[in-house]
Every structure is written in C-alpha cells, then in structure tokens.
Length: 441
Image (cartoon, rainbow, N blue to C red):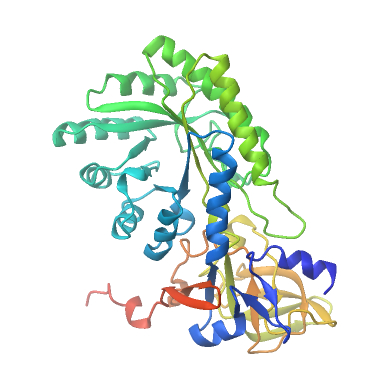
C-alpha cells in the first residue's frame, strides 16, 4: 500500500481495514456487502469510533479540569438510536429546535442534561421546553428574554439560563460558519452594550436564574488561539457584570467548533491541544478576575460523529471530456451532502471494491442532481471506475444527513451502525410513498 493511500485511510473510522480481496472494511464488514444489503447511497457509522471520540473528549477535558461536561451538539447528527449512544457515554446534549428536543425526549435522553440554543426560538418551542423541564436555555436575544420571563411566570416555574455573548473574536474559518464576531445574527454583542443590558434584564427577571455565559466562535476552528482570546474577553466582561450587576458565574462555555481531518493535506491539531488551551485559559482568567472556578462545558458535534461516518455510493454514468475532465457520476450528491456546494468542503474518496490498485486516474465525482454545482469530490485520484463500482467518501458523519433534502424528489438515504462485524439499521431509507404523505388533494 502506498503512502498516499495510507494517509487517505487515516481519515476513515478507526476500524478501517483493507481485506485480502483488496476491499474496504468498516467495523469488520465489507463495504461492498453493506452496499449490496442496504442499498446506496448509504451512510455507515462506526460505533467504535463514536464511543472512542466521546471518551476522548471526557478524558482530555476532565483530566485537566474535573468540573467539565461534554455537551454533544445534536445538529451534527440526531436520531434516537444515535442519541442513546451519546447518553450511554455520559454526554449532555445541545439542541437548536423543538424537533431536536423532541427526538432527544423520544430517545429517553435526560432532559435536565439538555441545553437549548438558537437565535429565534419561538414561543411554542420555549413553552414546550419549560413544560418538559429542560436543563438550560442559552438565551440569544432580548425578544427571547421577554418570552421566557412571560412563559415561566405563567407556568409558575423557575428556569436556569445562560446568555450567549458575541465576543468579537475572529475564528479564522469560513464566513458562513463564523458566529462570534460583531456582524452576526447570534448572541448579545459586547461592542454595542447589548451584552451588559442583557445581564441587567436577566438579573431583574424574577423567574429566570442567570447562572453563566456562553459563546460560540464558529466551526471548524483549526487554531486554539481564538478560544483563548475569547475566554479572556468573556471573563473580563463577567468581572464587570459581577461588580455592576451582581452576576454569579457558575457556568461558562466557549462553545464548540472542534475540527476533524477531512483531507490528507489539512490535519487538525490534537484534541489535547484544545483541552489544554481552554482549561488553562479558564483557570488563569478565573484567578485573574477572582472568580471561583465555574462549571465548564464544551460542545463538540462534528468532532464526535464526523470521522465515524462514511458515505457509500454506486457509480453510474461516466463522461470523459478529453483534455478537460472525466466525470464519474454517483447515485447521491448534494441531496445527501450539500457541504461541498455551500461551503466548498473537500473530501477524500476510495474505490471500495479495489482500494489499492496500481493504475489510477484523476476524476471528478459528481452527483445525480440537476445542478452543475453538484460535485462531491473534484480531481480525485482513484483506480479506474466502472458503472456498478462502489465509492466510499470518509469523514461524512457530521451535518450531511441533517442537511439532506428531497431535491429532485429523491428519497433520503439509510443510516447503518457497524460494530465488530455486525450491522444495525439506525434509520431506514425514505420511501417514495413518504415523499407524498404530506400532500393534500
């Protein structure tokens, strides 16, 4: 096996292998056999990698700062069997909609371990969250503060809240996933005084208990310095709010945004680097500003589930334009993975049926959707492909399925969990009948 292929396979789940038939193996199972059994497009999730990532976050953070909770950002992937794994591994959960909260509740996830985020939570969503005794609401704006105070007063309940603050720190990531700067729809800005006014209003609300502050800079963050800068800014703000408005900083979060490796030429810093940078900054800032150490929580999503997922596609039409490009079309695309189209996301790929072949060619893996921008991987170096071959794209576990659509009236794909040679359907493929169930004639 050549060094480039070895580097590509390192982007796959921890259990990846190439068997003696030169075929890709995930969780002890031949990827081609999985495609034959469950159909394509197919998203395969490796349970060992999922659990390993959960344990790594808990270990790296709590070994440095024992009073830490790992709160999984469910927008990366959310369904009932998956959330049961997250619960078993001892993580909390953050949700950004009533739908995600309902999935968590249906999965039996402890609601007191759920944090509710979002920049435009509606009255119905917040009312249900209060009724279900949600653990925390991370308040994003003044409208939400007023709604929550009214709803909790009406229900005769008290609610723990945090304020989401925009610290004005550039995380050096894609502009569509940058959230902690002044020009953002998220959070109370420090620069214009909104953050301080939010503290004043929250402290005056009789039915709301303001227990801390939260920030989220963006995603993915391939540097640790933005976290440290933001923590310094936020603790300085918190000290002023303590002195002027009596703020108690019992909980604190710098958010999530932890990256994964998508391609061989962009490696992510070790998780230990992030844990050390964040926990040491919290300790130092708490000491500087004379705070007791607050409960720390961080919110990985992509970093928990991204590497665990692999997308499998079947090759169909092939179009060779001599001197220009060779298009290899597959039976999925932007309907199940829109990230390349909207973020310019890049991926690796392998031929699952003949992983290590001497003869290779450069091709562009294109989807089946009626958009010229429906390209999954541009200029992929792969063995010669033919219709019916299976192509595997790693690092597909995060955001692909939650952002999937029925564009061109295509059903959404199935999800399979693999572990020690066994496969379990986590979410079945959508049917044609389900595409029309909501139609009213």
